[in-house]
Length: 456
Ligand code: SF4
Image 1 (cartoon, rainbow, N blue to C red):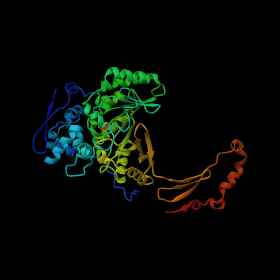
Image 2 (image 1 turned 90 degrees about the vertical axis):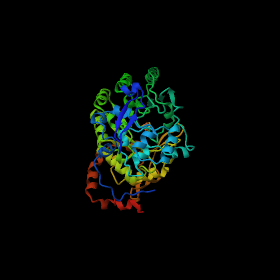
Image 3 (image 1 turned 180 degrees about the vertical axis):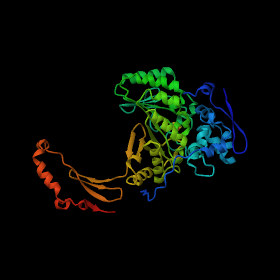
Image 4 (image 1 turned 120 degrees about the vertical axis):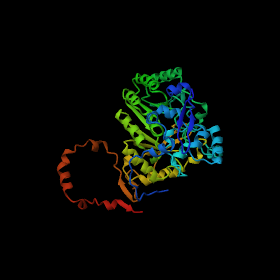
């Protein structure tokens, strides 16, 4: 059943028709960069401005209801052009792109766009670009080889102790950099019960699997009841220790993290949630509150960003993002190199950019704020962490290490102890050790500067 809702744009009333079917209407289915100055941190912003400008006639009860946002996603160029300034040429280009790569933006996420900023990082993640087609011959459809690693339909088992369940191909927003863009043209499906049973059967028979990731699409598009049926069944399998949920809802539709969902999740822990903030502007009062609700339900939240050209490809932006995440108690976990997916080439950065961003952060902020920069290899090769090279040489006796300021240090490599030495009692040396440690360091030849052999 199509649903109509009156939304107030800049100057006129607009009717946005739902593209969600009747079932969903009831319940959606389920370079070395050195930072010299860090900008003053700001509290999470409110998106009240965008909401007032575009959706001021939407009552609070609807705005705080995730199902309203889901039903009223912006999915056509016509709808989009009434809410965002677009030239005739841009509209024609977007129309062309959406024939291959559809469009879907939640009213909440759209309200974060700054119409006065031509390089708006929210807009670039949400609104199709003609470069998705003009550079579309580059890259692969399924670079991670997920189809090859599917052991039964909907279950990817690549690493020995982990498995990934794909529950749906539906997402509240279609991110232009998505790795699973190939799934977008399949029109929206939820994994049927018989396939869920086959997946559970595989998990039961493979006792080395201790960690199951619920993924999609976005698994939180399933209703809380549908989700609970699946999670409860997974929890019956004794060797499954943890469940992880991969979801961008906290970022693009934080209203989904409601009391009902949190109460359900709190019954089946340990459950972890990995979400996907890419830019500090996405940290709003609403998204912060959603993460807080998850944490209070006993669900730790990690963040997996994707490095995107013109959106977050510099150390200042990533640093500000990671500081903002820590302030809302979300751990910066991964910074992904954007996968070589067809239709995303215009958003990909050279690998060196990611390494330089990490180099620009290390030493300038707490290690807690620094994500691991990762490349996901093609053809099921798995994740490879990349970082600046701090080890200049390494031998049995000594390493040459470079610190974050470029200074090079000798570091004595403890040798492998001989069996008899390792077993020797220490007690006989206690008095001499005490005497030795009471002398000044210089007397013992432990002058730290001797270890510094070069300053760059
Ligand atoms: S939420 Fe994730 S799976 Fe869905 S479109 Fe965005 S990147 Fe792709």
